Length: 328
Ligand code: GDP
Image 1 (spheres, rainbow, N blue to C red):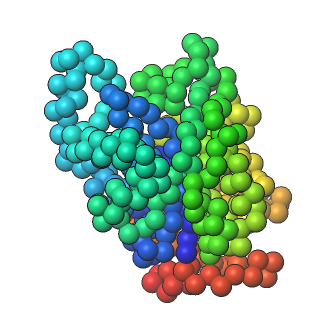
Image 2 (image 1 turned 30 degrees about the horizontal axis):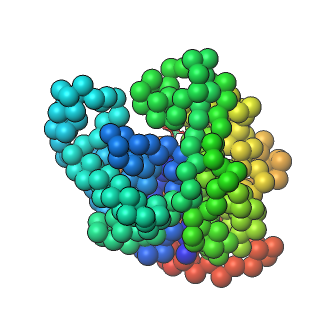
């Protein structure tokens, strides 16, 4: 089994590649819920939705979020009623939010609601929220503290950022299956997601970092930073706010206590050498994901690197990675 920590658009692209090269039944995804929000009274979990849509073939690849070919009639109608419309939800997307909200109102946990939705949409991989408790990413700016979606979607990440915190994290527990998935995986892959606001919330849940440190498989991360800049979005600003350089060294630093392998872009070959000098295993490859082929190629490289990285210090059977490597 391969375990993937993921969130957001970078993660969705990476998972789109993985699903091409490894049977979905062998993938467990641990997904960021720090961006979750109540929107028009409905519980929306943007990162769980993106991963669910990519694995069910519903994701709009042009937008990188929401359902392909969706319409926005409800959004228009809500605007006419004077309701806020800055967070875009398509009509088919809303159906998922309605179902999830009903399941939660009936007393189901977020894990249970996610599993029901996945079953109905034919998703064969296992999608786990990082926690069933509410952990909310809060971005501190000179205009006050904002939720992640207010900062990112409503205000186009234009505000300077003082710091980021994860409200509720200290009291949260990992969702059922999360620790076991990390500890028992043949390899744990960290998607090229924002290290602060997509992977950071997952790492803030007590017990998850410790599980990563004790994982029997190798832990490999793909850098979302290429040539000292994020491929998209505010990762650089947020890393700086948290005292990390916007570089592959910053990514390595964010994960330093558990990272075995870092996969970065060929453009960062020189910086990779410097990191190798510090003892980290680093592989350079093409990591800009535009086509289905790019995504599949990166997934293959990451899986085979995670496999070849299985050294005597971590004696692992690595059956899933071996099977995936056979497809290469
Ligand atoms: P956000 O957009 O910053 O909230 O972060 P997300 O976790 O949603 O995903 C965006 C992250 O993925 C950014 O940090 C991007 O740099 C990264 N990303 C997006 N597309 C690619 C890609 O094609 N290759 C790589 N390596 N990273 C990517």
